[in-house]
Each structure stands twice: as structure tokens, then as C-alpha cells.
Length: 540
Image (cartoon, rainbow, N blue to C red; front, top):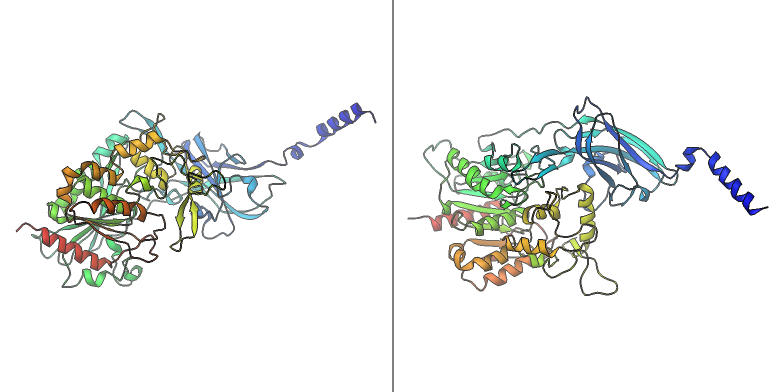
């Protein structure tokens, strides 16, 4: 047959094929929302999650660091009700990078949109981010966000598919826990933060009162300020027997001790200070987050000291916290050595950025791989078991954050640090420390983080002549020798420096194989140590 005839016949055959055959490889989800659910256009981020089981609800499986349930996402900009947003094979996903990587089979599909608010900040930048609704930056339970019903679907990338989902359900408001004789909840608007963000921003606190508080109206009390992630539960997990088991989380139930006759009479306070970037501000002033440090010390603490008969003196203000709260408790103590009387700091987030987990952000060129290798380059771990088994790598965590939010809006760990420690980018969003796709570290951002004082060990060394004498006897740090996030490494470096001083700092590593969350005492035992510190420093 004439070759030209073959070409013409093949061309005619393609023209005669139905359009559906030509589009057979297309894989996508089309997502819309009803005006009855949300009347105004939405700017935010839409997600589709594909679960193997209907329970727990598929959207509640989003964000698992180990990547057990795949999900995919895309930004939307002023999408009106009734119009469609598309998540297709080009949309980023985790742990699968694309819808085309999802094996053929049956799945439970569910969609959700994280609704953003427009902020006209006082620094001149206009950005879109999620306004926390007192859920702690967990968009899967944030009031006002929209979800679809769960739909069982059969997906086959080879055959292609076009699944339509409608967002019809509105997540309801958070129900605050009721106050009791012992536990009180406070929420106030911060004038400082509202001015910075151009929107009303709130601070909160949960207050645990001592036995006999109401019976002694003229008595004032020392205070334990507990730092940590957002939560509305009582400090130290305090609960009456039968309520949540009455357990304190870090040890035996606190209730019998706290309500007993021979226990120190103190007030315990946890803060609520979520930001548009994370469930917690890290209790410091920040170019991206705003003046949270000032707001806590100049607005919230004075409010609490006035309304709850707290002793307004440094010796009576004690700090503690673990992980995020560990970094905060140490930062508050060293930034304000004449305001607080001591810190019991547990397993803190990196306090020396030469050990930003395993990365040296000043010297290493890349956050994802170990430097110095030409072949078989090892991946940087981000999380391990106490036995040493790598569970999540830096690259995998960065992929997760990249899917959860663009422009640093994932509300996850690396981008939370960048929002707190880093500079503002030209677009008004946090400037990344490292590229979330390649791992390349921006040395200018690293230097900014150090020079602004967020590298706490560096800050201590640079300012020791001024602040060192005020920190004597005030620093107590504990962390497991096999912390899951390698946080013990930076603590070793802090201990090495403080050994050269007369600060009387104490360190506990709880060997062997103690992981993240290691604490050497029960809550009651630690409170007794804190009370002894208050008694020791009480002005006679």
C-alpha cells in the first residue's frame, strides 16, 4: 500500500474517534459549592482525599505525616457559588505526587475547602490566609469551612475519570468547655495584634485555680505559665475522676494532689495564641506573625494578674512547656530574664540552628540530603522511632507542607518556624528557609533568623554579659536522648555553652532510648519543684 494512503487512513480514523476516547487519560475531580452553604465567593485551598475506609471521616485523615491516606489540593481565587474548581493530574499530592499514581480501585472520596480571609496588615502587605476560628489551625475542623459528603468511587487512571463533588456541609462553631470551680476560660481581643493584622485577633487562657481560692479572697498566688500547642483543656490535663480518666497526660492523675491539703497553692495557666500561620505564635514578636510577644506580656498577662489575684513579681512567674512549648518557655525566660523566675523546659524545638533537627542551616547547602557525598547520597531524616528507625524524611515533610498550603500556609512545622523566625518575602508571605521541592537553603534567610535572635543558644552567647547574671538557677532542660525529632542534639550544644558559665542550669536526658515527650517527673512532682523555686526566691 502506498505510504501516503496509510497516513491519510490513520488521520481519518483519529478524526472519526469519539471525543471521549481522545480524553480517556484525563483524571480529575470537579468541586463546587452551593450558595446555600456559602453565599460569597471563596478564596482558599480545596482538597480531595481518597481513603480506603469510610471511617474515620476521610478529611480527618489529611495531614498524617506518615502519608497513609493520599490527598490532593489546589488554590482557588474568588470562586463563586455554583462554579467548578478542578483538581487534576497536575495538582500536587501527598504521599502520591499525582492522581495518576493512585492505583485502580475503590475509594471513599471527600472534599473540603479551607476558607481564607484577606488581611490588610499594618506593614503594608495584603495577604490571604486562614483566620483561626479557635480550632487551632486545623482546617478539617475549622468553623465555616465547607465539606462534601463521603462518596464511594471507582478510580482507574488508565481509563480516566471525572468525579464531581459538591461542598454542602458547613463545619459548625467550636463548643468551648464549660467553666468549673477550678477551671476558667478567658478570651480577649488584642489591640496590638488586631492593629497589625487589620482584623480582630484574640488571645485566650485556660486558668486552673488552687484549692481554697474562693475562700481566701485576699490571697495572691504564684503562677505557672504553661506553653504549648493550641488547646482548650485544663492545664496539666487536670480533670476530676471520671472525666477523661482524670489523668494528667505526663504521669498519674493530678486531681488528688491539686485538691489535697498538703499541695502547693499555685495558679496554672495555658495560653491560646493561634496565628494565621500556625496554632501557636511561639510567644515572640515576629515580622510575619506580628507582636505576639508584646501582646502576651503587655496585654494577656496583666489581664490575668488583675482578674485572678496573681502575684505581680518575677519570682512568682514560672514557665514550662514541651516541644513547641519547650522552645517558647526557654525563649520567654532568656528574652525576659527579669520578668520570669525560672523555666522547666522540655524537649524544645531547635534551640541552636546548627542543629535544626539534623540540618546546619548556616553551613549545609541543602536540607534534604547529607553533604559530602557524590554517590548514594543519604536522605536527611526528619523523624525517627526511639529505636532509630527513620519514619519521615525532610523531603517527605516538605512535600506534605507544599500540598497543605502554598506561600507558607500549610500550618505545619517547617513553615511555622519560617513564619516566626524568618523575614517577610516580597509577596507579603514568609520567605522560605529552603525550597520545598529541591531543599536548597537560602543563606540570607538563615542569617536573618540568627541575627534576629531566634537561635537561642547564639542569642545567649551574644548577650551573656548582660543577661547571664539574671538567669542563675533559672534554666532546667529535659529531653530524651533519642528524641524522635533529634531535638536532643541542639540541647547538647546549649549544655556545652552553659557549662562554661555559673548559671547552675540543669539537664536531664533520661537515657536510654527516651523519645519525644520524655519528662522525668509527674506533673505533681514538677509543680513541687516549681513551688520550691518560688519559696527560695521569695523576698523576705
